[in-house]
Amino acid sequence: MDSPYKRELEVAIRVVEQAARLSLAVLPNQDKGAIEKVDASSEHESNLGPVTIGDFAIQALLTSSLHAAFPTDSFVGEEDASALRDNAVLRQRVWETLQQTVVPDPEKDTEKDIVLPASADDMCDMIDRCQNAPGAGRVWVFDPIDGTKTFLRREMFAINVALVVDGQQTVAVVACPLLSPEPPTESLSQVTIQNDSIDPSGRGSLLYAVRGHGAYVRPLSDAAGPGVARRLQDCGTTRLLRPVTCDFMQDSALDGVHRAVAARLGVAYPGSDLLGWVPRWAALATGWANTTVWVYKRRDRHAKVWDHAGAMLLFEEVGGRITDVDGKPIDLLAGRKLKGNFGFVAAPADVHGIVLAAVRDVLQEQGRGDLLGEPKEQ
Image (cartoon, rainbow, N blue to C red):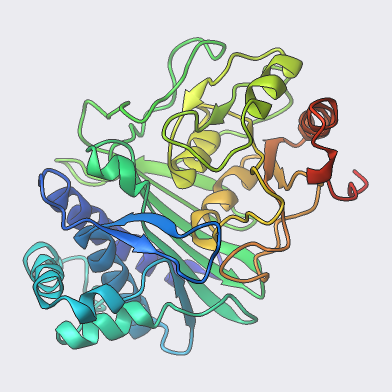
């Protein structure tokens, strides 16, 4: 792909490839060093879910390498190193994981794209370099492992890297190490993908996009090399809606609303069922699905920027439109949490308005008009 961001794309791909190898090295381990994250500053969201040695090691690798390549850029990532600074045993495990699993390829990494932290303390500093909020200029946004709960089960997960420039998604690189790179071959009215839909070939998928230049997928690993990238097809004009959602292990969505929206639209529920948001955006981009809706239980519940920035660009580059429940574009400058938006509605551009109207009608019918803001004119 030839674009003004060729160098950024090349470096991000190389680093994400290494991050994916690291994740696959950790994946089989029964003990992944998982601990529970707690957000004491939030009355409602005290338990933020698990974090593993893979999450910590990948964020350190991403930050160290991309900081070396682009030293004036800023970084935003999900994890912080406080648990590692307090737990010497866990810190050492993460450090050893980096040392043992990240092996730069001298034939490919001629420009030193893969840069490890200099020490365990430097590793913690690199992780904490990501504790910023998105702002103006060039900002790299990371989710080192999206779908940590399913990662612990050895099921679908993803690594998400985005370059956001002045609040606009510009470069996206996503690794889905367990997702097949091949397009759906079954009838589009029947095809679904689930958390345990593991690529039988073991190749996995690398997806990438640059704004205005399309989205692509290729095998993440292949005995004969990475393989040829395939440009993803435009989701096109369609009235055949194929949903992807999270009906499994989710606790943040408003009970019953997603099933009622599916019934209003005349589509099966849940359709494709994936825990992680990044795998959901990948499923939308690759044609396993073309529609998703998410309505939180409370108006003060907000998404995290690292679950969406970059991965959303994959779907937008194949003709998808993404807004919140009020029809507003997603504001990536609102902070680490997307406080300027409530929920998500994503569909092919020509039918997005139909899906959005169904969501708002269902909320009114269920007596939850309190969750609706003023609609943005379509």
